[in-house]
Amino acid sequence: MTALRSLRDALLIARFQLARAVRTRSALALCLLYLLGSTGATYVFTRILLQIENETARVLKVPIVERPGAMLDTLRERGDLANILEPLVGREDLVGWALEQPILTIVHFWFALGVLPFLAVAVGAESVAPDARDRSLRFELVRTGRLELIAGRFLGQGVLLLVATVFATLGTWAVAMGAMVEQPAGLQATTLLASAPRLWLWSLPFLGLGVACSQLTSTVNFARSLALGAAVGTWILFGVTKTDWAQGQPYFGALLEPLLPQTYVLDLWGPGWAWAGSGAILALLGFVAALVTLPIFARRNL
Amino acid sequence: MTDDALRIEGLRKRYGRRAPWALDGLDCRFPRGALCGLVGPNGAGKTTLYSVVCGFLPPDGGSVDLLGEGPFDPWRFKGRVGVLPQDAEIQGRLTCSEFLRYMGSLQGLPSAKARSEADRVLRGVRLHERQDSLVGSLSHGMRRRLAVASALLGSPELVLLDEPTAGLDPAQAASLRDELIALRGTSTLIVSSHNLVELERICDWVVLLEQGRCVRQGTVADVTGQRQLVTWRLGPGEVPLEALRAALPEHELQVPSPGLLVQRAPADSDLDASAVVIARELAAAGVGLRGLQRGRSLEESFLATTAG
Picture: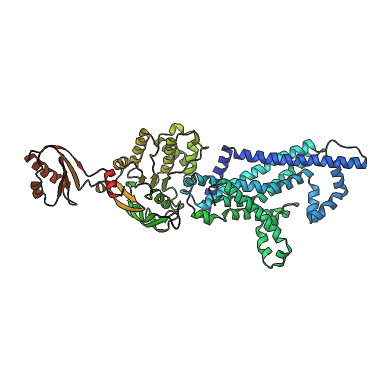
């Protein structure tokens, strides 16, 4: 009963958070920013690919093309691309899956893997701090608990990120249709849409870090800086776990690695629903990260 | 069920280890169903008290007993305690109605009830015509009234209002006072204000704070001495002080300046009967009566009790 009441409150707060994001146009700003980023990144990729293909065509003395992708498709069909990717990725099954995807889906995926964590920490950092600053949180805190408030804010910002993640695939799809050699529109759309939930799950631990930092301060910029530092810190720690020193420690890696989102990133690639397990762990990591600073938040004068 | 809506015992709070105590062993009580005033100079601890009572701030010691059920817990007191925080802003991008419906839902009201309650409280604070206006487009006074409306949503058992009339024009303040008076008996209201004339007019019970301690509490009549102190303003002539003291030996009678007689009666004495005796003696001595005042104003009582 208590859990249901808590869930009801968290959902109410999430809905309010979303409605406010729409009303303040911060949702629109996030969607446009992400859309422009993914569109720009994939478009730049097509220009670079065109240049590489045409340079190769000049060397091979074959006709140059106006739209990129044909040479890449040939490499893919002959298996040469697999030979290039296998040493980079390190897992044969993932390379096989990647080669079945339209190339811009993979580019979009890579771009989002790099950019989404930073968007997510920025969005998370805005979840509590501004309302602590103007004390508007008090109207909610007299009616619900701090745990429910944080869970609701995390959920609301999470849904906002999901919408932005889906929305951003539009730009990549448009680039694929307009700037590449003939691509199957349906396959391009479905693979892009299928990437959206995986990317969203990848962003959740970073959203959680942002929400956690937002509970520590009433200054949004400070919360953003803290959250960015924490996000970068996860990459540094992940790098440390891969060092010879860490490999030699009996517990260091075993304890730390399961807590780092980077541990699960490769599992998000691949066919079927194999990614769902790691995705669930990422979602859980995100929620737990959002609650890490709750004991401090619970003692704050709000 | 206790007779007190709020009982505070030995409450302590300070903002930092070396900071002075904002609440320094505060003991006070607020009777159930009463309209209570919380009075004190700046820094006396009024807002800190509200913050601790509502759980915005953890205390360093002491106890808070709300409605006889212990300290504040948002689940136990969901919808039963309404609060107007002093400095809290309302999100500007919502309409008045949206804000109140959200607050109503969050305190557990079903959707339809939240809507009807939002309508009711908006009418109560005379903001009904602005229900679809964005909060950001309202004046300061209107936002204040909206915040008061949020505290009254769902008719909570206990309502804490921190400076509810601050920034309101006289007409708005009077209208809000009427709204609060109408709630007397149904809810316990605790109102902090620097406007002592206003509090004296509407309150049944008053608590005076100074430096984080309660220096006086009781009914307004007790705190202002209306049952014990009478000031007589007299016309020219010699006051028959000896005759008066002989007639009322248990009363303390003084003439602090010409034309003024101050009477301090013992507790539980009959002031009306003593007034008849004094009036008779004055008439016999040929001293005219220009007026009399029972007790002091709340402001005078406050100034006499506190250092300020």
